[in-house]
Image (cartoon, rainbow, N blue to C red; front, side, top):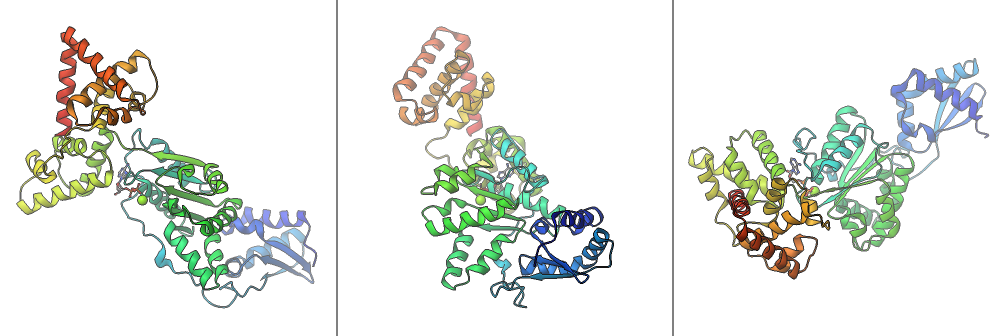
Length: 439
Ligand code: ADP
Ligand code: MG
């Protein structure tokens, strides 16, 4: 059977797009107008799910469009090639279990996501992806350490998309689920169902793809899934605890696919962002937390937002148990005794950066302008005074500088302070501020 001419095709789809835009799906591009004879237009779908949709929703629109294009009375027959593995064509319901999909936490929305220098790019890109899935950044890859908001952003995108379009099928799963499904379907000889499931979605959202490391066959399958979705402009969103090129033994072709869209880092939040997150979480949980307590918690827990939340919950529970309000004293006892090292270098970096109006990344970077080296040396000096980190460990915070550089930096500051009372005063103030943030 010869396919209908491209002009006829354009007329039919043009008419539907214009008069029934709600019905149009991205995969309409894949439909074949197979034949027009004896007053019947045959439209061929690629799979059973498309066929079902066409039968249920599109008969009148296609007939109307075909009549407009030909000027004759035309009826429409939808068809699809037989495929025993396609559950829709089998007359069986699609054997997809939704129980493996990750549940969205209702509070993981954009509204509840606090932005700061550590996550601004990732947040902006996530917003763009949620507004125009498949168009803005595809794939979109978020990476960063544990508990820094990767899953939160992923879920915020899903919430937004589902809110805008209830029909959109965004599959949100963990990488482990993908791998387990793949292994299972190979064992059961059901790879077609597997492919059907993963390739017939509007978007695929996979958390923690670092688990693909060392998994050759899963990587191979993932590569083909990726291509199938990407070629038809369906959105792919991924997270990992490191950048694509840092995932151990990840095939080069996957690394380059992941890098082909937008790769955004969520970094550890600075003190101010941590405080803003705590305020937001306290408000969400309707807990009254005074500012000094916010500062205390944010100053103490500087690695991971999940820990911040944990501390807040514990404090809230303690305040309920004791029937007393949240105070600095209660917070101190809730947080427990300080670990051996009371002040951390990130706190010093945050405070010194703010005081000298430079960025933490500059303090930790390679620049050698005085405007940066001076506060950098102050950080080294304070780190030696206030932490029990070795010279090497301190150097590690400053782009891997060696111990002699740290020693030289802090000695320079000590010498200058001895000769200059104003400078000593600044150091004392910083000293107090750092300790205040830490305790
Ligand atoms: P990850 O996936 O990076 O390990 P999550 O997204 O699970 O981390 O975040 C851990 C917790 O911290 C979640 O409860 C999340 O809501 C919260 N969180 C992380 N980043 C932010 C942020 N910028 N604003 C508000 N909450 C955040
Ligand atoms: Mg996560």
